Image (spheres, rainbow, N blue to C red):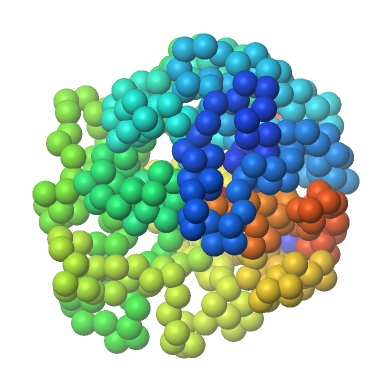
Length: 460
Ligand code: NOJ
């Protein structure tokens, strides 16, 4: 029998606006930093852009039919800020609102519960030009105003809201190493962007709650158990692991749940970190209803004595096969989900958790990666869900799992060359084909006992 998750547990899939919508300059949409970045030569590995992506701006209805076919309970998607507010503030684009109204209504008519992400990295270009995006506090204020507007427009139907997606990645890839939009390499700006995103999050939570009191609001963080890159670490190597953990994970967790940043990190990196203003941390630590966790794999940290201040760096992989999972190899580390869940229980007050992303495109090389008989992906999901189930048994309050992604989409600077979907997309024809993993996921959902009818969803 399939692993059982209880009657209120949600099974969903996730996407993000720039990665799927297309319609990049249609019906009054303003530009975002990703439109600019992907149009800049050499920034996207395969030279593609998100101009069309999966074209869901035009064909979302057929994708909703597929979601229904897969028996999904919920769908996580993001709103493109510059589609509804072309300049990021001020004039509203009614056609943008119309699109999301149609999307929300069709999802709900088909029994799918919408989880909306308000910011999935596509900063309106105009706010970037005028205020350096989240490099400044003004943008945090405008972001809160945008969030309030979204609740005024959609909060009557949508109860589940995610303020930010992966603020670490947005700050780090976009502003520290420059591999994502806006393509800046500036460690000081990195910290400003990290901090101001969290201020924006706190201000948005306040603004949203001032409009409605029946919302289920959370934030989605990428989370990584961090291990030493060498097999027999000395004290300095272990200190590097701790540093990396504070940099990647705890900065955000501590800010949100404890209203303070890790002191050791701040002491070491004092020339880089922003000066905190009175009230900042109180704003950031607004009570939230859930923590969204994007968990894919662990990271490995190594000491790099020559790097100023940080003196540590993170590698995505280690070549030491002693670290490999017996079945998944380097593709995944399901156990990490339990390690993270334990941390939340023991150190962060056991918050309600949704796994808002988990998935893989690592099922082979080149054309192999696109195949539809994707046994490795099935194994991957199965192992992660088993770990998730064990975390629940150990006392974690995990209420849902969103596979990333519903459909193969624009994977940021990897372009269209990293297919992660339960559904294969031929980006030339926009033809969709459900993969074996999609059918497997559907069966898993069908085999859950005593599912709640849609009318009895509870939110808070
Ligand atoms: C995290 C991001 O939120 C999402 O946009 C991305 O496509 C997936 N990870 C896969 O890399």
